[in-house]
Length: 194
Length: 98
Image 1: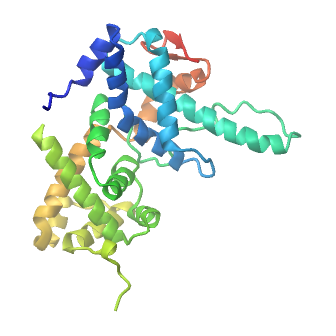
Image 2: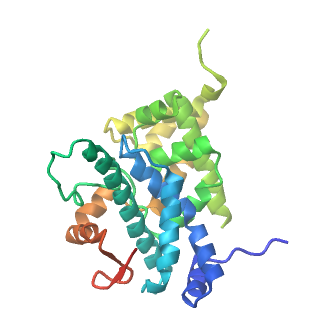
Image 3: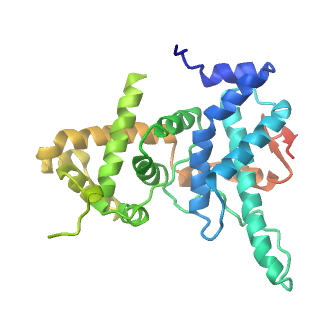
């Protein structure tokens, strides 16, 4: 039997009331969203070996561990909170990676690199992805075939030119445009049904 | 004979869309209505795509470049807080993270 999905707001309310199961479900609902953020962060950090799934898992574990200290009152604030935890994780991962390199050459000065590490993106056209609607969009994108999801992500969330997308997907520009078109069509139908 | 593989198979709308993307990527302001009129054989698909773009990009939020410009100092404050503590309620309220 299929039960109707519980809204993010309702899960958030239950989690705030101390329901640990609801907190787990709330975090799970944000997994696709965090995955998109993690992929964005890793796209812009060439040479940093990290796995998007590991970053997501780390963020979710931190969120569950620290939820008792979270003072936000709305699910939108929860999204913003997750984003900050995620960015901190990315910065830590990049810093650990550069620290490994620095260990090879200990002569170099120790620099506070917090403001030099950009965990966001290298694309000025990338979308902010900071709302509950972005969380819903990420959930819908999870239902797309992997190649369409990646093509849509790169074009419409990251703002990449079609030439760069084609190179990344190892396809022609026309075939990449086709993937984007079919992915967008499925998303449009999905949201029309809501 | 071309070396196009099955996964590179395309139709007229894909070709038109790739052309549209190349033009906008090059900084051209392409009028959507005029572009659709230039490609009547795939007008419906192009129209549906453009409708989807507006909806999906609205959900994804504004371009980061504009939000960074508007956020100004608050973004800077948020970044410097990473590693120490992060806000869950307002910029003045902090909660510790492990």
